[in-house]
Image (cartoon, rainbow, N blue to C red; front, side, top):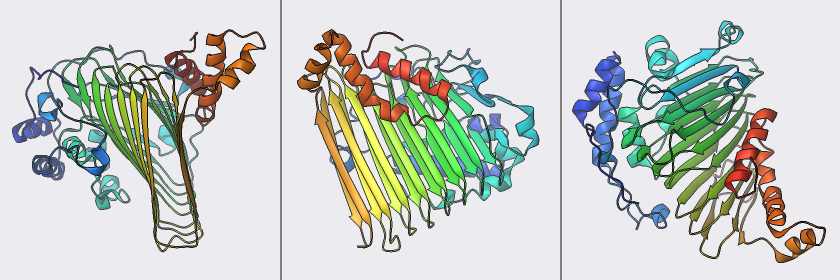
Length: 439
C-alpha cells in the first residue's frame, strides 16, 4: 500500500514540545511524551521476517510521512452509524482536536468521570498515576506505533466509574478523520472500579472513503474486582487508511470483560488485542467480525493471558472475505503455572466469497500447567452448495439464499452487542457491507 507524503509538518521532538505547549501540559506529561518519542526513534519498523509480521507487508508505509499535529480549525464530525441521543455520554473527537464531550447530569453527580485525557492530566493526575497495570505493560508487536501514540496522542478520553456504580445506558466515543495525509493517535483509558459496571460503544470513522490517513489507536482498560465492562468497538476507517490499533484489558478478581470488535474499514490494518487475567475467578469474552473486499488486508493478533486460577476466556473471530482481500489471524493462549483450573477457548472462522480471497489462521498455545482445559480451532471455507440448494428449493433465489447464509454466519457476533438499538444498526451495516441487499 503506497501512500503519498504529507504536506504538513513531520513528526519530531520539536513538534512534540510544541504540541505539549499548546495544551499547557504539566512537566511530567511532557517528559513522558519525549521519552515515547525517543523510544519511537530507537524502535525499528517491523519487518516481514518478524514472526507476527510475516503475512503483513509494511513496504510503502512510513509513519514519518503523516502530520501528527496541526493548527487547522476543527471540521464538523461525520454522522457515524449511531444516533447520539441513544447514549448517556458522548465524546466526539475530530482529527487532532480535543473531543467535544457531553454527559448526563445525573451521572456527573454520581462521581463518573468522562473527560478528555488532556483534562484528566490537569484535574485528576492522581488517578492517572495510579491507573492499575499501566506502568507494567510489556512491549507488543505494534511497539513502533504505540510509542508514536505516546508522543503525539491528542485529546484522548478518560473514563472512571467509581466503586459500585452501574451505568445503566451506554456511553459513546467517536474518533473521526476529515482530512487527508494526517495521522491520528486516539488514546482511551477505562477504569471500572470494584463492583461497578459500564458499557462503551466506540466508533472510528472517516468523513470520506478516499482520504489517506494513518491511525494508531491505543486503549487500556482495567476492570476491578467484581466489576463488568462491555466494550463494543467499530473500526470503520476510510478505504485508504492504514490503521495499527492496540487494545489491552486487565481484569481483577471475579471481574467480567466482554469485548466485541467489528473491522469494517481501512485498506491495511493490524490490531493487537490482549486480555489478561492475573486474579482468580475472572472471565472474558472476546468476539470479532471482519468484513473485507477489494485488495484490503486486515491482520488480527490476539493474546489471552491467564495467571489467576479458575479463570475463563472465550475468543471467537469471524471473517467474511470478497474479491482479492486477505485476512490474517495470529492468536495465542498463554497459561502460567499459577493458573490451575482455568478454561480457555479460541476459534477463528473465515467465509470466502471468491476464489481469490485468502485467509491465514495461526492459533497457538503456551501452557505451563496440566490442570487446565484449553482448546482452539480454525476453519476456512465457502458457503456449502447443499445449504444453498436447500434454501433455493424453498423458493429463494440464489442471491437471497447466499444472503441468508451470510446472515446466519455473522449473527453470533452481532448477538454479543448489549444495546438493542446499536445491535440492530450494526446488523444493517454489516449485512450491507457483506453484500446482502438492503440497509
